[in-house]
Length: 141
Ligand code: THU
Image 1 (spheres, rainbow, N blue to C red):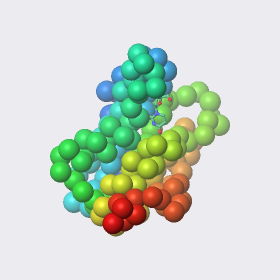
Image 2: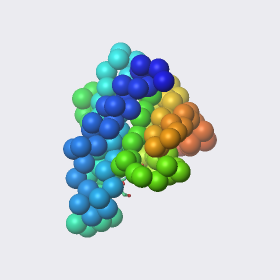
Image 3: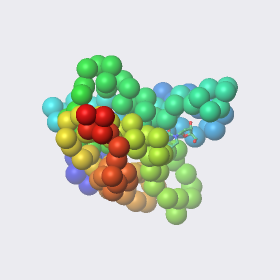
Image 4: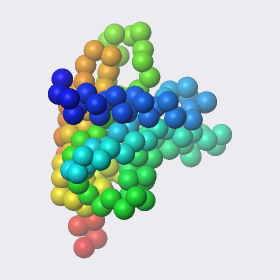
């Protein structure tokens, strides 16, 4: 495993410790890597009104954008809780998060690799494969 990938996954796992997930008890971490080497993380934040819960990826993108980032997204790591189930599938970003990640990626013209982390497997998928023909800023142009 490359150092970059390894440390991005470690950052996502670390971020998951900040999750507020008392309802699902499913703690998710996300770490975004930018062209300048910066890493911005997020964790899921749930709500007693369940449908208002925020995913880790959305929290990370929001944090990055509030910090002023408008592109330069090169890689994303997403981790779910550790599990005994060795055959558990790697976690992939939900549909809404794919769109949220795509906005930030499209602003900078990148197609970030998404590291979907499982117990035995890290699936590496370009965002464009998770969300083909994405709607984005250019559509409103
Ligand atoms: N969750 C994420 O944070 N990211 C995803 O891509 C999938 C789901 C969160 C939402 C909710 O707090 C918990 O995982 C269970 O669905």
